[in-house]
Length: 82
Image 1 (cartoon, rainbow, N blue to C red):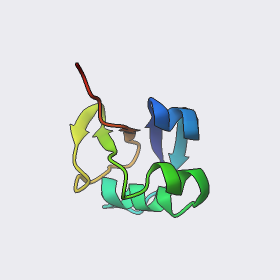
Image 2 (image 1 turned 90 degrees about the vertical axis):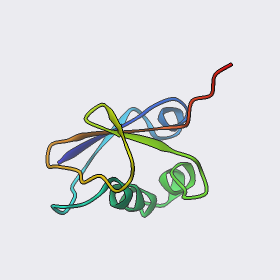
Image 3 (image 1 turned 120 degrees about the vertical axis):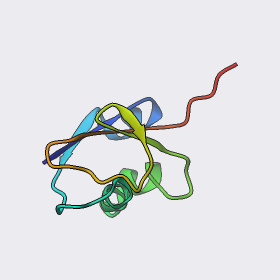
Image 4 (image 1 turned 180 degrees about the horizontal axis):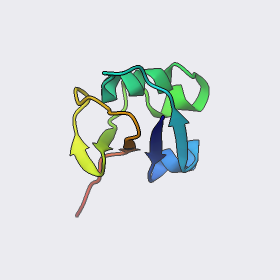
């Protein structure tokens, strides 16, 4: 079981977290695609046309990172500063 947390505008749309089952060896990109496959708000908010950052075990990661069983994954929009 993977714990998925959402932050900022993603949290507003999807709630604070989900729990997801993933096959062994799945990547962050595959997890994102699985969530998009739920349709509805997940498909809209996590769409491949939108910039979304991710972290694995509280460390920034790209979508090729493998997600181990029991991991915590976070999705959030890119942060802009000024």
